[in-house]
Each structure stands twice: as structure tokens, then as C-alpha cells.
Amino acid sequence: MAEFSIGHRRYRTKGEAKEAVREVLYQYTVGSIVDQEDDHLLLLDLLDMHHEADDKIGPGVEAFAIAPPQRGTYPGFEVIRTDGSRIDFSYQTCLKPPTYRQQVMNVMRDEAKSAINAFFESRRAAGSLVSDQSGTPLNSSNTAVSYFQGPSFVDIAEEFAKTVGGWEAIELTPSTEPGLGRFKARDLAERWFSHHQERAVLGLLSSQENQRRPRR
View 1 (cartoon, rainbow, N blue to C red):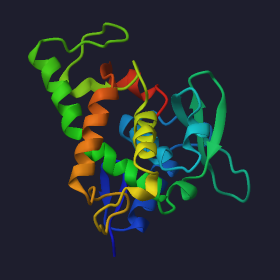
View 2 (tube, rainbow, N blue to C red):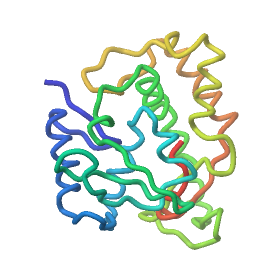
View 3 (cartoon, helix red, strand yellow):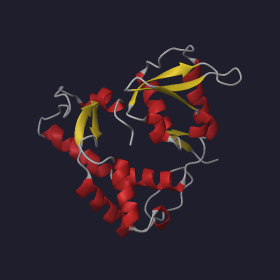
View 4 (cartoon, one colour):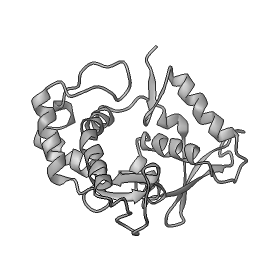
């Protein structure tokens, strides 16, 4: 059976991924905040997989909480946004197969990874590992490269898709792993990389600051 991914985490099956999420759900009591960083990051990546992720995230994610059952006897997850508003989301919905747009966008992120890594290494070599938002000194384990100073990654990707005829015009190599693969046409991959380089305005944030940014 094909592997299943939630962010960078890979599971042998979709069932194994579901069990990892359920472990987070049931280790907290109803009404409590998900306060372990690894659990919080898992839920951030899981929420990104929701087909209404932008609406669920809104201005940004402050935290996650365990919501009481809405139907039946089982609790669920609730997003606490940075403006104080709250909204529930179904982890079952998040685990449904990704749309083709989501698959292409995941490949785009992977194709742009070398540029992200190069930016981080250049800042570290220059001795400027500080938050571009707060000026807080950072270290390698507490640093995130973010698009917060310019167009979001989603905006950059959607602009590119429009220039080549839409998402369906971007063919991917076959893959047994949801959302993974490569551009089938390497010249198109190079065009995407150049487009990303031209449009991305990268900056550094602490991991905590980045967690609170809208996930786009």
C-alpha cells in the first residue's frame, strides 16, 4: 500500500497517519490547549491539507484546542486564531486524497526547497540569524524561512499556474506517495524555479512567530 504524508512526516499507510493524529486528539482533555510543539506542528501541517484551509486558518493560527463532540461522542480539533476567533475542523476531511492542485503545489514547494535552504545558509554565513519581524536573535533550531514580507507562496504558485495554462497543464511524474513527485518537463521546473526566485521575498522568523502566521 502507498505511503501517506502529513507535511514532512511519512507513514506506511493512511491508517497509520490517522492513528498518529488520533493519538494527539486523545492525549489531551476536552477544552485543553495542544501545548506540545511537535503536536502543534503536526496539526498545522494537517490543517494545510484541508480543502478549506485558507478559511479555517483566517488571519493565522495561535493554537489548537480539543473541542467537545458536536455530533456523537467523539471530541475534535478547534483552531484558535490570532484574532481570538475559533473554528472547528475535521481531521477526517484533512486526510482525504489531495486535489491535483494540492499535489502540484507540494511538488512546487519541493522544487523550490534549494532556494529556501540557500537563503537560510546565506543568513547564517553572514551572522544575521535574527528575526526580520521582531529582531529577536535566532539559532538554527529555532528559525523558519517565511514569505511574510511579500506575496505568499500560494500567490506565487497560482500566478505561475496561470501563465502556463492552469494546474492541469503542469504534469507530474508518477508517484505512489500522495502529493509527491517532480515536474515531468524539467524545462517547466526551471521556469517555475526562476518565477519563484523573482517573486519570493524571503525573511527569517522564529519558529513561534512563523507558527502564528497565516499558513499560505
